[in-house]
Each structure stands twice: as structure tokens, then as C-alpha cells.
Image: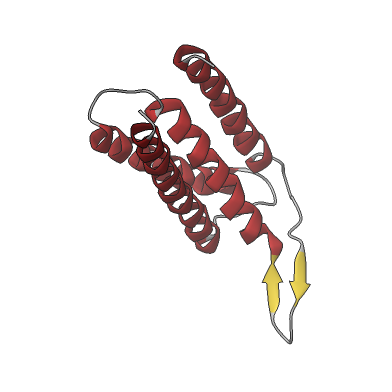
Length: 136
């Protein structure tokens, strides 16, 4: 697939995924599933927050970094800052939704997912480039 087509695909996936995040965050009174593990109650929504933002950061990375010749570190820094702003906004936005509240632990899992996704993407991107230069 050509770089331009990949960029369009990842841009489309980015906006779809962002829309999904906003829609899910806007559902009033969404219940929180919980599981009990040896006298410890764990909220499954923390896992959902982590993976939703992990996938978001990977898609964002693939859209903006793939095939770019500009300074990748500066672009990555801006992407991380914008993603954290989105995660913070998402949690504050929930205070406006009936039956929803701001939860700092959700925000921690949002950011953990973001950083894990960006680190994972960077590692894969470097391995891909190393393999590409090895086989040239």
C-alpha cells in the first residue's frame, strides 16, 4: 500500500476512533463493571480506558509518523501533548454528563494507555526501519 493511501486510512481510523471515544464518554449513567479478586474489587473500566487509549495512540502514531521526513521527535512530542489533553478533556467532559463523574484513576489509565501505545509504536517503527535498511 502506498504511503499516501496508508495516511488516508490511518487518518480515517483516527477520526472514527476519536468519535467512538467521545460517544462512549457521552453516554449518561454508564454502569461500571467490576470483578472481585481475593477480597479486592477491580473495576473493569480501567482496563477499557487503558486499551481504548492504547489503540488511539497507535492509530495516531501510524497516521502522523508513517513516511514523514520531518523531525519525528518534535512531531511525537506534539502528538503526546495533544493526546494527554484529549484524555484530560475526556474526563472533565464527563462531569457534564448525567450520572458520570470525573475519576482521576480513569485519567491515569488513559495516560498509561497513551504512553504504552506510543512506546510500542516507536519500538515497532524502529524495528521496521532497521529491517528495511538491513535488506537494502
